[in-house]
Structure formats: structure tokens, C-alpha cells
Length: 101
Image (cartoon, rainbow, N blue to C red; front, side):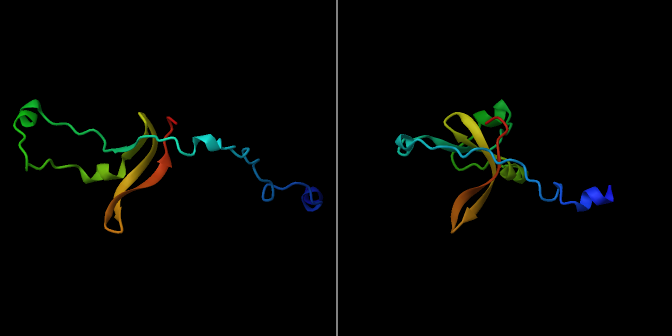
């Protein structure tokens, strides 16, 4: 076994998984508009509280949910991310590709 390992045969350290083929982009799609939206996870509120809402009232949100923003392309969730800011503007950092994509 020792001689086989030294013989220069394939080793797990140098073997790489095959790369998927490169995606070929159709340039006619470059300027097709698509709706991108970000959605906060669902919050629950009682109907009584909903009916008494007035302009200026504040709904408290669970801060942990800011780590679970869904980014949708059209009506399909494609990414998940976290809410934050960049250069004094609201932003969402993409943290994963949605498993439903």
C-alpha cells in the first residue's frame, strides 16, 4: 500500500470535482425588465389590533427576522438575505440561494 501511495497515482488531495458547464447567456434577454422585491417574513397581528391601526402607529418587528429576508424575482423566491445599510441606504445582503429555485 505504501508503494502504491508513493507511485504518483491519483490522490484525493489533487482530484477536483468536475466543474459544471458554463451557462451560455442569451443577449436578447439583457434588457428584459423583471420585478425584484424583498419580503420580510410574515408577522401575525390580531384582527382587533389590525382594525384599530392609525397613521403614525408603530408595529414592532422581531429583529431576528431581519436575517430572513426573501428576495423574489417576479413571484418566485430566489434568494435569502439579511437587512442592513450601505452608504446610508437600506440594503439586503444575499446570504443564500433559495432551495426552491
